[in-house]
Amino acid sequence: MSKIRIVLIEDEQDIADLIALQAEISGYKLVHEIDGLNGLRAVEREKPDIVLLDIMLPGQSGLDVCRKLKGNPEYKDIPVIMISAKSEEIDVILGLELGADDYVAKPFSPKVLFSRIKAVMRRGKEPQEAPKIIKFGDFTLELDRYQLKKKEKSISLTLSEFGILRRLVCHRGKVLTRNQLLDEVQNDDAFIVDRNIDVHIAALRRKLGPNFTWIQTVRGVGYRFLEEE
Image (cartoon, rainbow, N blue to C red; front, side):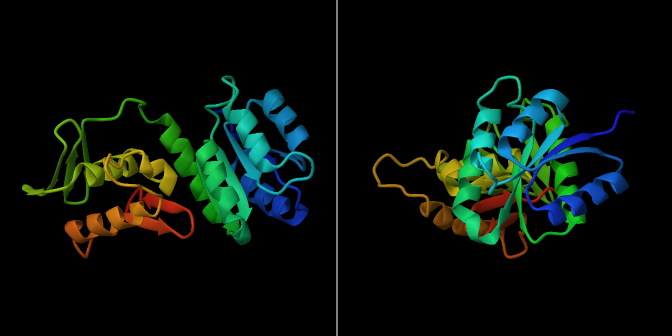
């Protein structure tokens, strides 16, 4: 069985050393570059299974690298996890909207990072065609019938609430920004901004009950539907 190949683009050597150590422990092959240009060359050369990409890099920023990877048909399907400082929330949002699959904020545990890597890799192996029925806990989401049930009891959702829940569930484990969820809001008569999503999420949580904890708020960025509880 071939090793999972990682290209790490990170200019802080101490962080790179921690990630490299965890990669070795996990049995992964890791190639490390410290700037965007050489990072792109490493991706072209190695054809990795996943890219770990720091946002703040010398020369080309991580956002520039992400834009180039996701804009290239040859590399656009390679998962990208952004690595950011907590002060770079707006850049995280831009990275996710450029197509990055997830992000981790510094400081982070290498074990947490590698659990994210496994989750992203697992999503990449799932069938591309969304199932018509998705189950989580006591809930059943029937996509073609626009229906949500808890056990056998139907829960009434607006089109916007259903659309937001459907997108979150179909991308479970992945952080979605408010702007990405905004596409699911059905309202032609009102001025819609990204913070309206918070209102819809709050309404969803009320309808789904106090014990419903599958939707996770990612502070300053958006929301994530948990992969498991």
